[in-house]
Each structure stands twice: as C-alpha cells, then as structure tokens.
Length: 362
Image (cartoon, rainbow, N blue to C red; front, top):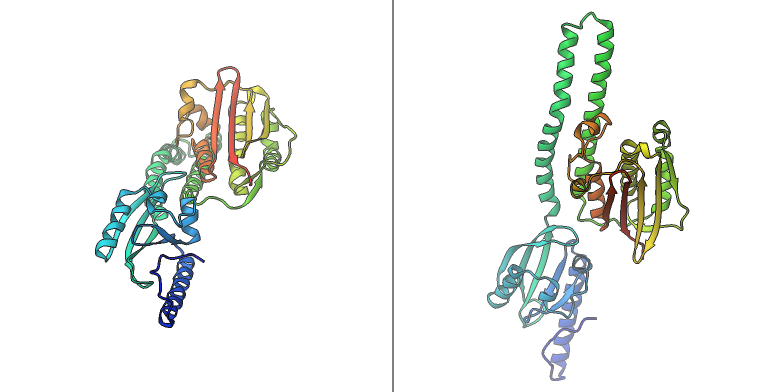
C-alpha cells in the first residue's frame, strides 16, 4: 500500500479512527483511479505523484509514483496548471503533445482535490485526442490525394466511353481494345482506393502499439507462397535463408502486408535480377528481415523520398506496372506503429536492399 504524507497522530482513539478513515479513503480513491479508462495521476501539495493508474504508467513508459510530475511530463503548460490549481483551487484544461515514439495529442484536465485529507492535492487526467485529430486530417488527405490520383484514370475512362459511343461504335476490334484498356484503368482505381483506405486505417491506429506475437520467418514463407505465381510469371526466384524463429511483438496481417509489399515491388521493378533473397537475424533486442534484389538499383537521390506518398522514381513505369505509389508509405506507417524502422540501400546496377527492424518479443 502507498504511504501518504498524513500528519502524525497523537495515538488517541480519535486519532486512530481518523487514520483508519483516511486509509479507507485512500484505498477507495486508488481503486477509483485504477478503474478509469484514461491515464490519471494524483499529486500532493508539492507536485509529487502519489498514485497513478496502469494507463498512465504505460503512456509515460515509467512508474511516476514517488517522483515529481516534472520527471514524467516535461510540459510547462501542465506544470503551470498544476501549480495554479494547488495554490488557488479550481480546475484547468491545457493541451499536451507527446512526440515520441509516435506523435500523440492529449487534453490535460487538472483539478484540485481535498477529499483525502487536509493537504492540498491535484488530479491530472489525460484525455487522448489523437484519434479524433487523425480522423480529421486523414479525411482531408484522402479527399486531396484521391481526387488528384483518380483524375487521370477517370479522364481516360471518359475518353474511351465517348469513343465507343461515337467513332468506334460499330468497330468490333476497337471496342475490344478499348474495353481492355478501360478494365486496366478501373482496376488501377480499385487498387488506389484500397491502398488509400489501408493507409488511413494504419494511421488511425498508429499510436496504439500491437500486442500480439508474429514470426517474421514464417511470414516470409507465407509471402513467398502467396506471390509464387507472380514470381513465376516474371521469371524470378524467391529464396529464403533458413533461420531460427524471429518472434516480434506485432500484428501478423500488417507485417504480412509489409513483407508482401517489399517482395512485390522487387518482382515488379527488379525482375531483371532473376533472384530475390530474403534473410533474417536477431540484432540485440530487435529482429531484422532483409529483402534483397539484384535488379537495376535505385539512384541515390531518390532513396530519402521513397516512402513519401505517391513518390515514384519513374511515374510512367510505375503506373504501367500497376503501382499506386503508396506501397512503401504503407510499409513505413506499419513499421512506425510497431516501433520499427525501415532501412533502404541501393546502387545503380547492383540491386537494392530493404531491411525492416522490429522489436523482438521480450
């Protein structure tokens, strides 16, 4: 049980009863804080954290009990609000942003408390507004990106329809050719919308770290089997090195999407190398998986921007191969959610290496 800095009693029966009452109030308040769905801390009149629920400890990645609030939250606005409430009472609301490991936005509610004893105290509750802000931003991004990227295929479809209604109305050969082109453009729009929706879902949960367990080696084997037909059509062999299980803390489906995007890109753009090698290893507290091709490579000036949305080293080639320009952006955002990293190395004429690094299961 936590020890609160109550004033010493004189040992009388009244003082003992008062102490029992305070201890009961303390237990009830601690239980209440623990049951709240948001991160909550209770401070004494010196700003020391006297109680914190599990959600607060998870958010701060530490146990703040017994330490000054400034050791856990380095926010001048919150510290000033706490000081104001301790001196004058009442309640205040201030904004709080956490920048690492991923950006998160909170509203801090600070209120005076005096139900546990004569000393001043303050309650700090952090309301997570990350999802709401991401929803608004993603809605705007989706409309902007979708309208820009869908403009070209929609214009093509309208042109083909006008041609089929006019000059090629009775031309069977032209009709078949135009219908095939229209199908290609429609499938491209379908892939683009699917990737945009996938990216939006990933960003929506970027602040919530996955809690499951996945084996990167087994995922690589699964991806190889899934893409076997595509690799065969391209004349590419996918080779996976034998390795011990690479257990990481992560979401199986999302990590499948990461490795599948990397391998599929290698098949599409580096098929001339005829070989894609996948290898994995344990590195300290992380697991690494490398997807290496032996294709034409990527010029150095493109490497820093490859994970940007819709960035392409060759837009025409990317579109002709069915690319949406979102594959590596999806990879980056999934790895961010997993607290992982992507490392890209490439040399013209010598192929490319894409290495993902994800925290291993402890």
